[in-house]
Length: 196
Image 1 (cartoon, rainbow, N blue to C red):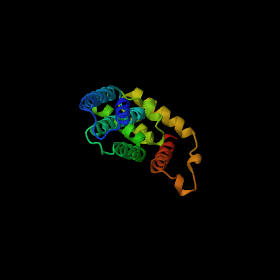
Image 2 (image 1 turned 90 degrees about the vertical axis):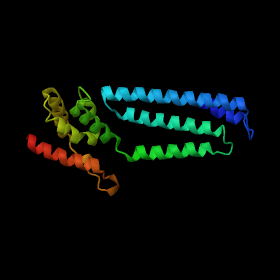
Image 3 (image 1 turned 180 degrees about the vertical axis):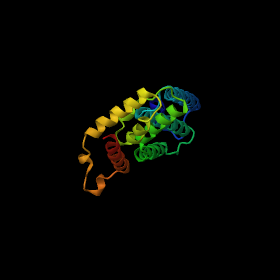
Image 4 (image 1 turned 120 degrees about the vertical axis):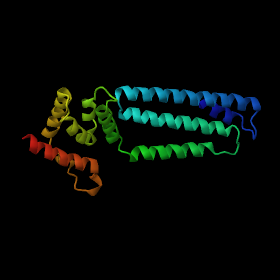
């Protein structure tokens, strides 16, 4: 990608030489192929071990790299094409989507549902415990799991969590309110009452 951008920058002509276009297209296609291959390997990894926040963000970045490479390759043939505007716009759209989507809930729900459906042999209960408020509903589900080891791990995490006061979440300003956190507080209050 850097090489393609450098070639476009160095050869500031209306029409790029034919050999440059052919070589640039070859590099662009190979780069997109490598990104797709890396993404496919990541999907295999997710299928075997589950989803994490880092794996989600890695997939988003790989998608952006493939799209960016394709846009820069198009620029080789269309001199007036504003590829940098398109690259920045796609980065903004993907960034907004990542910030808007609750990635922690997505990770927890995927892992628990994949475990329940048999896609995953085990579920990483500790990882779900690190997902903060988003992991609480899924930990409560796993606390009732048929596998006693999974259920015990989930209950241990919930018990440790219930020892801590949620008073630091009580932000009086409306800007501090969060639906996922609010729901987790309600679920933890109900869990405390049933476990006492």
